[in-house]
Amino acid sequence: MQAALITARETIERRDFPEPVPVPGAAVVQIERCGICGTDVAAWRSGDPYAPFLCGHEWTGTVTATGRDAAAIREGDRVVMAVPPACGACAECRAGHGHRCAAIMALAYGIHPLTPPHGGYAPRIAVPGDSLVVVPDDLDVDAAAMVEPATVVLHAIRRRPPRLGDRVLVLGAGPIGLFAVQLARIAGAGEVYVLEPRAARREVARELGATLALEPGPEADATIRARAGALGVDLVYECSGSQAAIDAAFSLVRPGGTFMLIGVSPGGVRLDPLACITKEILIDNSTAHHHHEFRITMDLMRDGRLLAAPVHSATLPLDRLEEAFARLARGEAAKILIAPGD
Image 1 (cartoon, rainbow, N blue to C red):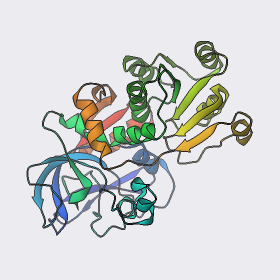
Image 2: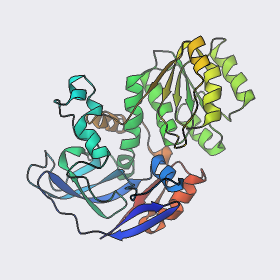
Image 3: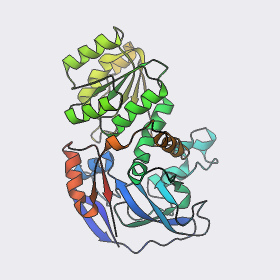
Image 4: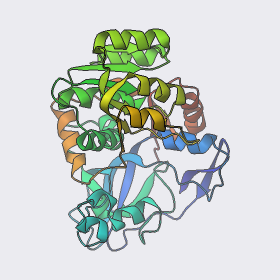
């Protein structure tokens, strides 16, 4: 069986791997869709060392075999890749930070004993059974493949939710930003403004509930100030990794407002400490998600409050993976899903 790995700058290789087997504690999944994450694209474009990079974590599929003690997962279950439940015993769990549980971090960093040798750009994969969440029958396969990135945003907004009626600014209208627009509305935001350089993404943001979706620049800043009031916006969700957008946001957030980092910039960004101090801006960030939050995300998708279809740009076969990465790197799509096939 072959799986795709990132092995050098803008280089994807197919390598041969043994067929996955259901060892104790693991389940084998036939992958039906795997979304391309922004971190995958950033790794593909970077010059960082590769070992190689195990890309492809936003996947969904059907369980074909299970090992002994593979949690409650059964053959035939439709599943999404999530994270294991918190162990409840490590230092982070005892401190109330279950999403930073040592067992979860071990899987994320590839040091868990059941960590697979490749990611989801493959026909099949064996993973710890307790890292899977069963997908309801009425959630379609494309939406299921976008549950993981949507849950990243859900976790962030649950950490720093808007108060009822708050004015919220979302930086970037890629998949993370588009889910942030919707979830901010669900959480009670009064108005949601979006800064996004690409016209097509701005249009989708408006369709999904953005009050304003504007091209970044001085004119957009003035428009947001006029709409939000003299003090500025209450809460910023940073989903772009753009230094220019972050600089603008610091001038737009009100004194005592909150700046929440969700997006990741591989090259790093600069935050203005003077603005943070003089305006008493609360800076927070979020990583990953809790196991149980996947079910919350799926319930929101099932009842129609959280829409995945407008975020989905295309589905391509595995042999067009390089094309998909290039399109995303050029900003020509929001979320591209890969259908690995056999």
